[in-house]
Length: 609
Image (cartoon, rainbow, N blue to C red; front, side, top):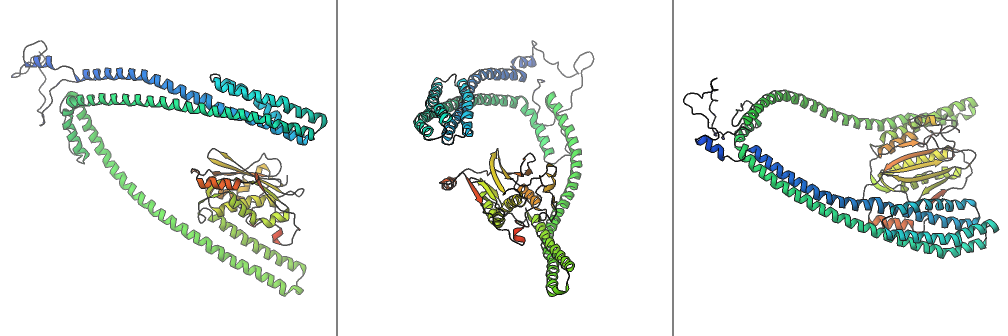
């Protein structure tokens, strides 16, 4: 930066002419002072001290020293934090998971032995053998994880001794007794005597889990302390940086602040809208260069502003047109909804007349009609009724997401119960059984739409049942991240994989009306309902026997409340693990009620397997 005295607040004078080629100064103007020469210029130069650049060097050196010192301290603090965090994440947490896995494997061994003692069925030994294999995998893993934790390794050794004693004294003895004498009182008595030994195993679990939890709490405390130290170090570094920044601000104020004041005043005039104001160049050379650059920028901004003003006018016109189109679209949607309602009623009225007058014609002139005429009348009545069903289903499909907007939080079991109640006749006549878990989760959704979803999926499974066996429908649910993954599985005729997309298209059928009733809208309605609730639905093409539909719903994003816990406890008290809805086979009835579950349930289940 050029070391020039600050300019006056008034407009600067014209630049002095360049000196002649000989290097002599212009007439009437004294020569510039040089260091080491007499005169006021030389004295001022010797007393001026550090330049702005020197001050920046000093400030940079201070910042560098502070940075190095802070880096050393922070390295130590971060190392301590990393060690505490690693102990939690790499050792304690995996050890807790692996210990739970090992304990479950041991429990499976005890369960398998008791079941084998009672039944003698080799299948009951699968939990024993699988648990033993899992235990043998978990123990080395735990030993590796707890290499630096003597107390926790002692807990693991105690657990191993207890489970080995139980297997030696009871587990293998029961298996040998069943192998020699078969299941009976002797093996059952031995298994019962082993309960005390396995209670000792459980006691070692409790000690192990308590020590793991204590180790985790200690690790969290260490991590909290190291983080606190780190935070105080960061605060101190920030304070040092702020002090340094304040010193730099003072330096900048005296070095370049005053020359920049005039530039700021001129720039503010331009910023306030006076784009015709010309910014003059004043002060040191770099400030003058800056002023010239700002002036050039002002010229470019003025040109760009003119263009932007024109574009803004165009954008305002487009916004107005878009608002008008939005209003028109809302009006069109309202008219379309009204049209659908009116059209459904106006279209059904002639159909009802066709059906009723055809039936009156058949009754009044029954003795004058031959079989062919009665068949034609039956065709007309059936066609009118099917058209009514198609109109109602199409209207229902179009209203999903528009009229059904009663969003509320409810358990998925409630709409499932309503759907099963609606399908009670079909379930009874077919002898169907529906297996569903008791603990279906809570979701946010529309109760009517969710009932329609369950009714269509379960109704399809009943409609497209296999003629060789009673229909069985199994409903399962599990959580996957932020989604509930639900499946509906049946043992019916199944769906060929090549129709996995077609079945979700409205009015697409895979069977003739003489084979299965329906309009072909049910699965399309299911897809629209699931997508309206933020999920997706698809067919499992790899399921061998029958059909399996998967669909997802978002997990309810809210913390559990005390009321939820009380309701869960109340629901779980004395309840079996899953609910089975079964119906005794009923005598087939004549008429529509025995043909299909509902007209709104789709007939797009797959072709015969």
